[in-house]
Length: 387
Ligand code: PLP
Image 1 (cartoon, rainbow, N blue to C red):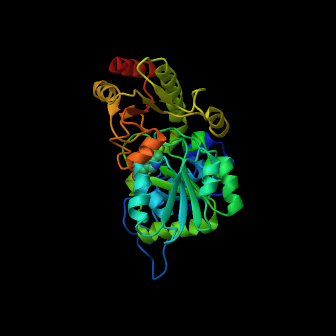
Image 2: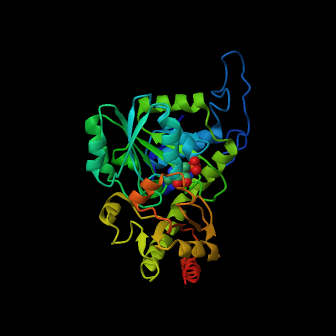
Image 3: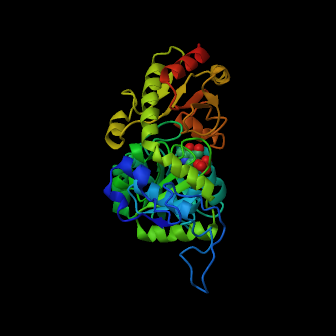
C-alpha cells in the first residue's frame, strides 16, 4: 500500500501522469525511477531499517507506480497487484461467507469466473444484474449486501452505469461501490470523483499501453478500506515484480497522449462501421445512436478506443479475424497496436451461455481494440477483411 505524496494533487492530469509519485533518486539523481530488483533490504540493527524490510511488503518501484496511479485517479492510496484479477481477488477477500455482492451482469469473463467459481463456493453470494438501470441495482440489494461492483463501459458490450446514481444509492445504504475503470482510464473517467470508493484497473491494458506486462491496481481514498486492502496485499502476496511496475510506470507517462489517439481512432472506426452493409450493430458510446450516449457525454471525457460490432453471421466473423492484416487476432486490449477479438470464444468463453444471450454477446460479435496507428490504414484493413 502506498499513500500519494501530499503535493502530487496540485498539478493538472498531464503533469501528474509524468511526475506524480516519483521521488528523487539519492545515489545518482536518475530522473527515471530505478527498477529496485531486490527481494530484501539490509537492516542496520534489530528493528532498525530504512522503511524497507522485504519486497513483498515494500518496493520503491512499486510504490512509485502506486502513487502515480492513485494520483491520476484522484485517490489517496494505491495498491499494485500481479494482474487485474489479483486486484479483484483482493477486493473479494474483504468479505466473508454470507456477504452479498451486487455486480453488473456484463463483466470481463475472468472477473465473472473469479466470483462464481472461486468465491461463491466459499459462501459469498452474488447477484448479476443489468446496472444500466439503477432500479435493477436497488431491487437486488439485501440486508447482507456489502458491495456494488461494475465495469463501465463494459467489456465487450459497452454498457454504461450511471456512476453518480449508483454512488448516491450506495451512500444512502452505506455500501461501497467498486468500479473497473480499465476501459475508460482516469483520462476519460474518474469514478472516485463521482461517488465510487474503489477503482480497479487491469494495468495490463491502457495504463501500461504497450502489451508487455500483466498487472493490476486498486485505488481508494478511504482510510479503513486502504488499511484492509494493504493488509490483504501483503498477507496474500499477489504483488507484481519491480520490472513490471517500471513498465507500467513508463506507460502512464504517455497515457494522456495515447488515449487521445485511441479515442480519435475509436470514433472514426465506429462511425465507419455504421456505414457498412454487412455490419448489423455497432457498440460504441460515442455514437449518437448508442442508447446511453448522453450519459457517456456527461460522465466521460471521451469515448475511448474499444469498439464492438456484430455481423450476425459466425462464418463471416471467422473470415474477418482470419483476413485482417494490421489488426491482430489476440486476447487483451489497450496497447499501441490494434487487436481484434472474438469475445464468445476468447475473453468471455467462461461466461455462461444464458448470460451471454441475455446481454447480446452473440457468436458473431467482434471486439476491436483500436491502437494508435493511422486510422485510414485500420479502416482499409477491416474493409478488405469484411468485403
Ligand atoms: N477487467 C477488464 C475490463 C479486463 O478486460 C480484464 C482483462 O482482460 C481484467 C479486468 C483482468 O485483468 P488481467 O488480465 O490483468 O488479470
